[in-house]
Length: 275
Image (cartoon, rainbow, N blue to C red):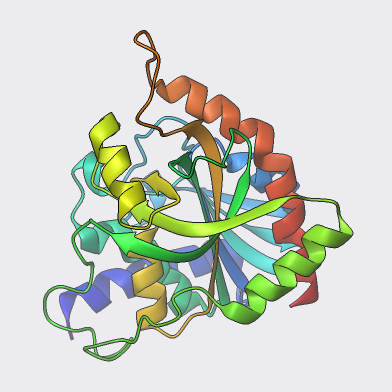
């Protein structure tokens, strides 16, 4: 058997030994400063990444490093309280391994979130943006021998984010008086924040928000035919007309994400309840 599949299955079996035989309805990946959603999971079972075979350790600011199982929106879910990033030095196989593990556990949907800079001039700090599409400037996680057990060599990415879930999210947002933006998310490697010229370039090629994550997870989920819904929390204005003394600060990003986390939590909860 492919050694990659063995690593995936080993991690999945360990998690099953901790959470029991229930099949999670959805998997959730929580980005920088967005771990607050995990506090809303009822009857939580918390497993540290440190204890899960073949899992990396989350070193980024605002990522607690826990795999949590429990109930959200009346359904059994699993959630990553923090993700892994390419810029932390992990290969793409390890960055995306948890998504493969969630597939083995049986998730029907994947919800992804991130803190992002708003390159769209109409976006302000605290906005929630539905990810309609993306631009990938990270290495593709499917490079290498295809994992035939999970999906085809050339998966279709015409609709990486599920249109029906997006439509339901907009309906719920209207009911709950949550303002939603919608746009294209671009991911670069990081860990440096981008230069003003790079922000201008990203806007020119069609990006509305920019970050350093998420897309590899989405590609792997779509490889396995898992429907995906994504939200970016706009945590800083990624423009090219800054004041001379402006500085991008990671702690400020986490604070801005935390302030928007309640609205994102409500949206995710209602979606899971109604899907």
